[in-house]
Amino acid sequence: MCRNIRTLHNFEPHATSDEVRAAALQFVRKISGMTKPAAVNQAAFDRAVAEIAHITEHLLEDLVTTAPPKDREVEAAKAKARSAARFGARPATAASGHNPD
Image (tube, rainbow, N blue to C red; front, side, top):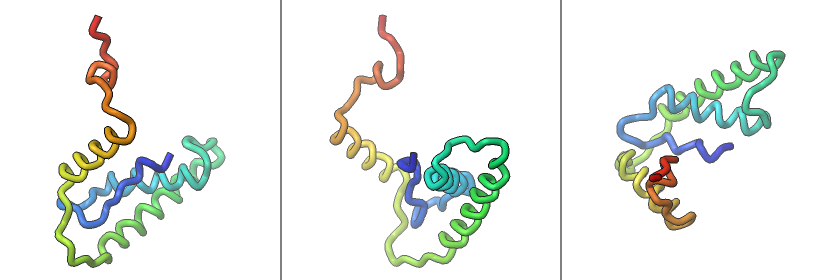
């Protein structure tokens, strides 16, 4: 569930509100143990996502680093290479779900 939470600090361009909200949603899903809450829990679930996203925005604004900003495309390529090394490369047709026949 939480493998979709990505590092959001020190990237250029900065993390978007959508990225912050997606990370907050994954966090709340993980700690609540539910991907879609029952109607009775929806308000509490949504409030938690909003509050965590809000405080995450503040955290990202307040963090200080001397390291140069990371490039999203370079980091994505590194992650893809790590994944290929760990799980093996899949043929393009299998990964895309297309049947060559």
